[in-house]
Structures are given as C-alpha cells and as structure tokens.
Picture 1 (cartoon, rainbow, N blue to C red):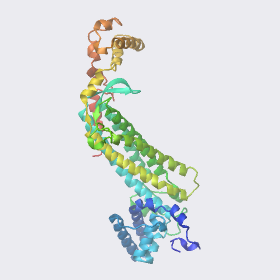
Picture 2 (cartoon, rainbow, N blue to C red):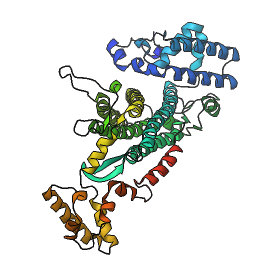
Picture 3 (cartoon, rainbow, N blue to C red):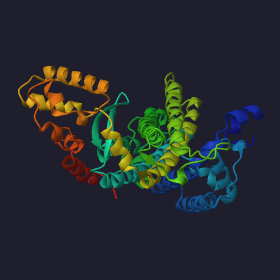
Picture 4 (cartoon, one colour):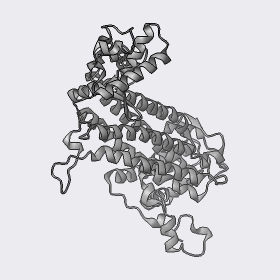
Length: 458
C-alpha cells in the first residue's frame, strides 16, 4: 500500500475520495508549524530514551532540510499523501530512510494537527495585535492634529451636537484597543499544548509532555487528552474576536465613505486608495473602504461555519474538524490585508477643516446649550427643553440658525435670555463647555490623547 497507514487496507483509496478528503491544498500553510512541532517532539523522544540519540539527530537534520525547501518555496506536495503531516513524513522517510518512520512514535495526527494550529494561531494573533496597533497609531496621529477641528456629531445620522474631530476619531481608537486586548487575552487559551495526547487517550510511551510544551513556548499542557485533540475553542475565539474587529473596521469604513462623498466633503482619501470609473472620468471612488466594509461578511461567515461544524460533534476527533482550517486561514488573511490598508489610508487622508466648520455653523446642534443656559437661570430642564423646541421651530420658519436670531427674538420666548446667550451659542463654546471626563472639550481630548499614547505598543 502507498499510504503510510495502509497496512489495514486491501484496496487503494478511491481517487475521488482521495481528492475530496485531502487537505494538503490548504493545510500546507501549516508546514513550518508542523516542522516546529516535530522538532520538539523528536527532541523529547531522545531525551526520554524512547528512540536513540543518533536517530534523533538524523530526523532533526532531515526535518531541517525539508524546512529549507519549504522556506525556499521548492517543496512539492501531493494529494496522495492527504495532508501536510503525511507529506512531510513521507518526504522525511524518502530523505533519510526508514529511520524517519520513528518520528511518529508516541503521537497521532490528531494531537499533531492540533499543535500546529495552536502554533499558527499564536503566531498570527501576535501579528494581528501589532497590525491593530499600527491602525491605532494612525488614528492617534490624525487626532493630535485635529483637537480643535470641529465636526457635526450625529445620532440617527442627524445633526446632534458639534464635537472635536479628534474626539470622533478617538472613539475608534478605543474600539480597536478593546479588540487588541481581546486578542492579547486570548493568548492565554491559545498557549496550551496538545502534543502527547495521542489519538485521544494518551500513549503507552514514557513521554514528557511538559518538556515538549517548554520547547514550543507553550505555557500550559492540556490536562485531558480527549479535550486536547477535540478542542477548537481557541479558533472559534480567534474568529469571534476577528468578527468584532471587522465590525469596527466596517463602521469606520462607512464613515470614510460618507465623509468623502460630494454631499459631505469632510475628507479626501489619498489617490492611492481610490479608483476611477470606466465611463465617468470625474469619479474618484472609495473602493478600499467599501471593500473593507464588504469583507466583514466573509469573516462573519467563517465564524458561523465553524460553530456549525462543531455544534453536534461527539468526542473526540472527527473528520469534520478538517473544516476548521480554511475559514481560519481566510479570516487571518482578510484581517491582515484590511489592517495593512486601513492604517496608511487614515494616515494620508486630507481633513477639510473649513468644510467641517461650515457644516457645524449650518445646523441647530447648539440647541441643547440654550436649554442648559435656561437651567442655570433656574428653569427645570423639561420646561427649558420645551422652550428651546419652540425657538428651533420658529427659527426654521424664519430660515435662520440660532446665532442669527436677535436678543429680542429670544426674549419673546423667555425674559431670562441676556446678551451672553450668543457667547453660549458659539460652537467653540459649545464644544469647550463639555469638560466632563471623556467629553469633547479640547482639554479633555488632550487628556484622552495622553491616555491613548500609553496604550500603543510602539
């Protein structure tokens, strides 16, 4: 039989079955992790006197030779050998002879693949943390330049109150900070070693699982062998955190699309992040944020796909679990591409301060401050709210904004209005007056920036 596991079988695997069940077309992404896990495993086998030290050295050298081929891109993979583990083992035996068959002593493909995926998830989680940090840095740099830049703040996509543009941007900084912290926290659960759990019940060989964990940089060893080979919680968690991260990326992308539209003209994205139209020469389309917004769906899909695969599986390993990889790879690659584009796109965008300021001056977003003004004069807020509602209705009918009304017009609604109402209504005052912790006043935004700087990693 050509299969490394073929001793039990009397027939060759049906070619369609071979192609349908093979995972080498995608799990070859785990090649370096598989080598890393095998090097640690064979090191432990030698230290525990399970195989001779001379065999350990031959196997190590063979694995390192294969690693060089992988890194050089010259490694040849075969569907006939099903997956990355069997491809590497077969090549190892071809390279160093029958002694290569000793590598699999005391382990199964079940704990082997789980180890590979833990190593991959750990490496990629650390890389994603740094990419998120780069986006935060870009946001922070823009915020530092726009503490005193005003923009309409919205609720229900209706003008609400003027805010500092830096304050608006920093809201996304803190969203990404939570994402970064979720990834950091997830490392506690990714950093567990399944190797040595065998197929599901452990092994009869006197292995040292703690030593393997130490060699691979894992902090914990799974205390239950069945859990070790069947656990995919760490992948679900990676996909879950990724889905929430993509939600935040999508929300920011939506704002970039809106702000760069002709109707808003609050920002202009750099030409290198936009495309044109094949028929309308005047167009400058925000394709990158639009695509970032769309890619959120595929990340959500990967999460739901894995949850659906896992929901009805009995212990321990099942072939269904082969479906855990492509979604994870796709999500990681989607996030890597998204974050690598988002950071420079934010960094290079042009902020149109005058357009933003003009928009702030052409609305009723300072109305709440008139109510607060009357409250300081002794009127209950609900009564003040009613008065201001009538003033706004009057101003709309007169086609005026609040700063354009005269003192006499204000006094017709309440005798408590004085000349200082116009200072209260100035948009600079409206923004600066919100000095409560976390507010949009420049003094608070400056403090927020200092706090944010403590959270960036570089």
